[in-house]
Amino acid sequence: MTRRDFLSLAAKAIAGTSLGFALGPFLAAAHCVVTRTSVTLRGLPREFDGFRIALLTDLHHSEWIPRSYLRQIVDRTNLQDVDLIALTGDLIHCGRPWIPGCVSELSRLQARRGVVSVLGNHDHADYAAAPLRHALRSAGIYDLTNDGIDLRRRGAEFRIGGVGDLWRDRQRPRKALSGAMSAESALLLSHNPDYAETLRDERVGLMLSGHTHGGQVIIPGIGAPHLPSRYGQKYREGLCQGPIVRVYVSRGSGSSFPPVRIACPPEIAIITLRSLPESRT
Image 1 (cartoon, rainbow, N blue to C red):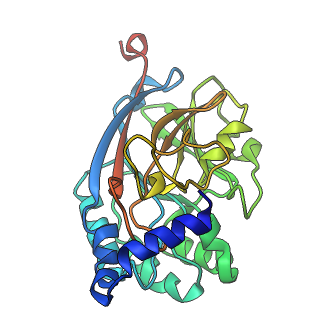
Image 2: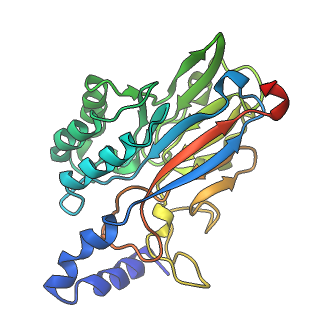
């Protein structure tokens, strides 16, 4: 099924009446769930064992994902009491006018070690990437596009880096991972999970991504009729294995157009990093 066929089918499902279309944002967004996953990294220092990350992605702030919904997502995320919040792009949907409201809400996010971000393909539309990055930085959110930071805890360090969007930007992992020394000793943010297919750096223990939305519409026995990935259902959602690097792919916290989700609720993903048992002693 082509993207055009999928969009046509989904649009017909909600646009048969004006009431059906009005329910679209509700169907897309109102049932956001909090999911929890633990991932063991061989190179994670024991000082970071139990480090908790909230992954937010694909908010798609727009006429169908209003600011009031973003406010609810931020409030629910703040209740999770995490160490770090990672934003992996598509924060707005194709337009600079959506930047102020989106960033105003994201500026309220609270985590012990702050908030980090990279952009997605939709963030680049309408020449929005530069002003969006500026607004995020002004709000105290770290821009990790082809860059990274070292987190320190009781003398130990853990590298968190990010790369530009696979479709609309460049990817420079060498700079993003600078300072990481051993296997699975770093975390990498990439909006598009397909980047894992070309990433061969064993220092990355986990990549955090979005982009696929989990397919938005799931048909039993078939899966997602449409996924924006070159690799079929491989990177649809959850913990996935690339050629070298594992990837956690969030279904996203919002929705693209048409704003319908069937058997694929949006999520706030809480990921707990664990060190190897022997390194905890």
